[in-house]
Length: 612
Image (cartoon, rainbow, N blue to C red; front, top):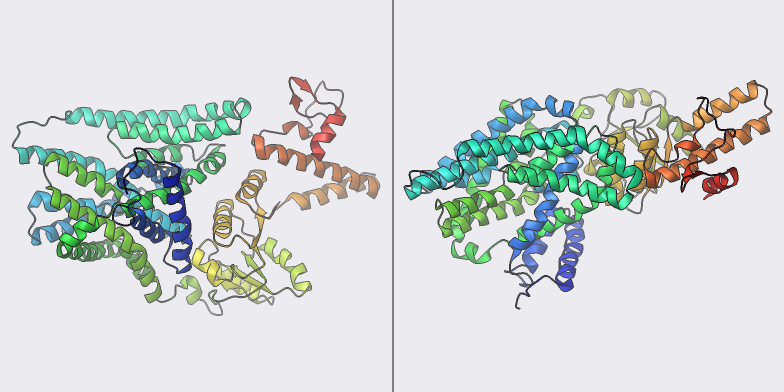
């Protein structure tokens, strides 16, 4: 069928339909969403049903999904935390890139490639797919784990490596052409542009973004805030791209600079839907880009290249991981996860073809090797996870501690500190079948002395949630005391088990707002009810009768509910006038509510706002 001049509604419907059909099927088969998208892209691409004949056009747009993904990762990575990973980024990451690059270059030379061609092919394959690895770590709930943070560090160094590699391609191109000088800009200008882009992004993120978002929160509206969030991502990515750096690196840096902003969670909520859709579109376009004609014509070269390069790279990664004292299991898992090429290889190979370092046959074959390696990674990771012995961590070494496996309780409790211990009492009093998981071995052992059977498991991991029976439970109670981890668990639960009721212990007001926006069925601030009961007891002791004290507490609760409703749409600063303060004011009436069209609401209007 002929390709239309533009993409119509029918093409958009095909893209969405391919993802909607393929991803649930592949996830049901436990093959992961990445492989589902890749297979769907291959099916509707030029070498399948040929609905799309130019996947490169879609790929350019879909790369924005990777950019947004890195921005969200940056929001979770505060500068102090990033500084703490400097050894992993510039030590572990550099060692992996150099070690794997050397072995892969030697492999290419052994296959008969010239030194320049073997080097560029090898270094393109060294740059692992940020999109594939991040998505798989996210689905497995490992992004926040130490092993996940080390993986992120390596990916960051690989993103940085694309800059000198592109410069090397330009030099090699000039050497191949026999030119005395290159037609591109001088090196000093390239370095100056890169440094300038970094400075602009740093200054804007450090001193301009917060005041601007504060102004927009007050006068702009929700849709303007969303547009501003996207502008931050696009602007930082564009500046870095203009400076010759990675767009994903620019977005990540912008996220890091905004990680301590009061608007961090609002930004993440605004851009998250775009990330999910565009990242899926990216994987679809990669699947479309697999040239089956090249694979058929040079199948020995392509298949042999995939096997040899993935095996050699895995050996190099395993050796570097063990050199940096990673455990046996982590070294194997990292080797399998990173034993692939990535999206930056497309950029590097295109530059090499343009510079005359590659001929079209080598470029097409190398690109096919990278795409096949990306498609095989979910399968090899799944096979590795099944072949490796079950990970029990500390649980395997502690007496009387069992890892969560095939639990079937009506209610699953994640975390068993003081809060969860109290929560469990009314459930157990009514005979509810409760399963409990906790990742603190000492807590598990202490709980057993009081008659509780608590299993070892990290609720932030998707495989542990499956093993703990989250898919069969009527309700999951997230009772941990770390807000960021609770947010991640809620996202996993709502994404993987949408029919399961999710009850969450909230840390503070901002956390409550995030949980509501994430779809939690019930949330409560951990100190709210106890503080109200405490205040009620004080009022009674001060001379109020119990009915008057109860009425006062009920009014405080109504005001708090009204304020929370306003904050859900207007941000944390909304509804401030619904709180009583002890600062003297000229207002005659203590019950004053927010302004509307330049005037203060009267008491009747304020009550209506509370009850709305």
